[in-house]
Length: 258
Image (cartoon, rainbow, N blue to C red):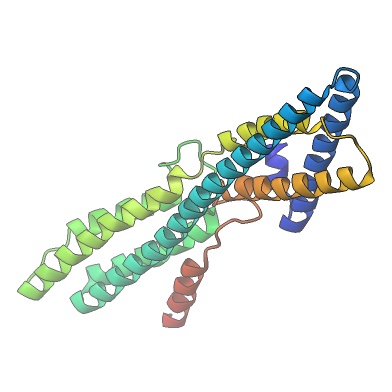
């Protein structure tokens, strides 16, 4: 089910997920009320209302903190991709200033690196995340920069700057690699359990059309938040996948150069 919503377009997935959550919440509420209504007293109703408000507030607090955290991680990865492209440009510019046939060869490797990222996508097909065309091209770039033999102080400085950039490039590349492992966020399980308990406590209220309508609005809002938590937990795949715009721009620039 988790993978299904990652493979479904955003609007379609959102509508289906919200409907599923609303159906789940209303079903739990109606079944719980039917089971408990014979035994409910005024004291039970007062206790249930207090506990319902408390559990609903706690669920909202958990979701709000989790959403804020997922949003931070999402944009950290997006910023890392922009930074990765930026360091590629820095190396390319320094190679232009460095000059020579070896520099031209490394520039071609940089173009090949961009192409491999776009071709492989964020999720490599290889079983080993570090055994891909992208990582192999990176190794060639790194070793080629190491093999450069500066013949002037300026070239010495440029080589040092490029080696520093290529180290940063490795760090940002690994940010993508570490995000390729798909896992069900714990908040999904916690939220489902919290919603289940909240709906049981809501059973102290007698069901009617207005009550069920209010409950559907509440559970639909909760479902919307949970859905976005799910799709944002996998920034490199799914309907909210981070796109490769920085690399597309570099590819266009490289094609213009040829």
